[in-house]
Length: 193
Image 1 (spheres, rainbow, N blue to C red):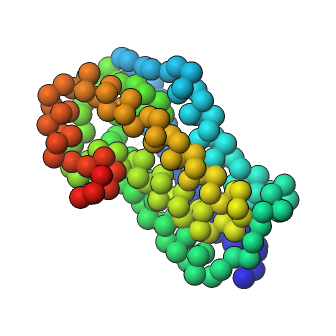
Image 2: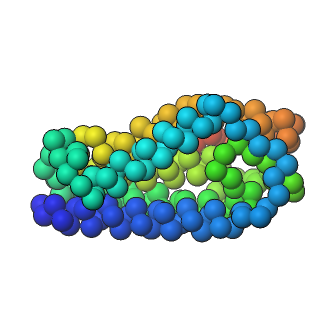
């Protein structure tokens, strides 16, 4: 398979991803924050996530990770591209449902409300799921043992450390309403977890 073709798919998916993330961030600029939790763990998590996003871009632009390249298999690229599309669609859908409630860190807005409609009717953390799906697509589409799984590893670390803290913050903010919501939904995967 033509390596330039693979790089074009990875680049296009990442451009769309960063545009969507920019739109998400733009929508919340100026929204007053009532409560923010940014400690050492949160800072390290943001550094890990940034590295997970930057390493594939370094692979695209340089030969720094060429030692870990392998031949791209067409079926892996096809499945990876499908996961890219699914992850991007879910990110877009989640953003639409979440609206101005989104934040890049653990924080609550002044007028924060618990979102339980749309995709949130079934799962509590669809944005994390969208990031996992996108990162899984990248792992399959990007034929490099370092850059391919970089985003997936970063997302798994983020979820492992942030999910419980985020749920605790939501319980503090919404109490029984969030506990009831938690009982009728799954964290990431409908019907499983």
